[in-house]
Image (cartoon, rainbow, N blue to C red; front, top):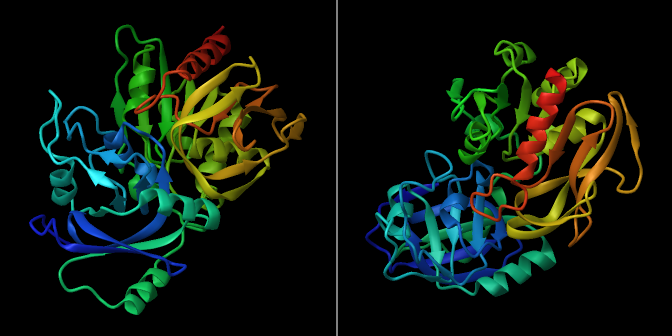
Length: 380
């Protein structure tokens, strides 16, 4: 990625997909060029949380909501210390942000962090194209002296693909840190950071859990050095087929029958640990309005998603695994993608979506309570 600072916000910009389709607009954020996987998010709110979600590392995010940036940028809502998206695509950016917590415009924040974006394009047409053709590599080029179309397309096709990408260690913490329990401490949890969002340990802390956040490269010895009552595996970017280290750690946790909870990438890790395969979705699930059914209760939840890979597990049967019986606990009602797994003979479960509700609905907050119940049961 090469960028310059904001100041040429009206410079021409071009978005080039790897299949040759081109969209022309105006620069938004930093001016320069960037590359990544083109994906779309259907959330109408929560753009700050989206931008700072480490799971979007090396992805160029297209916002399907037409107006973006209306509430500016504040200092309370980021999910990590920086913006992780590789690029940002909007139709109509807000000209003047308006919110009592706003500190600066979204355009200014993108420019300050060197994030190249494009505005003024038909994001509906772009989204329909990705739904029909699938997620693909993309480049955004902006400035007053742009390369010719052939050169831009060649550069896009030289960019790395998401399949086979091992990215968790690039976004995870390098050193262990602790998020203290709020109020009385009831449990200790070792959380393996594969790209964790800040709200996730906060939701556990609200329930009296002291969370030790460990690097993605943590070993089973590192996990058990904190004497955990439970182990958590977070969301994160990349292809789960590359995550052999976290899979091995999870298998060690399953062997010891420690209560285990995984979300998003953690769900895919559990799938692999149990012996299931994973695969890349055509265009993924990203947004805060995905319907998921909890098969254990029959309840349908509106949920927040950000994933391009899924677990290949049978929907309507109990499977025998090296760690006992397992079943699909949650399913997406749009396309029957596996959205959760649970073991029937050990205290372990996972979901493919984001129950921390940042940003998004609160329907799935009960999953943190379910984790607490597992730890209570193990202690009893």
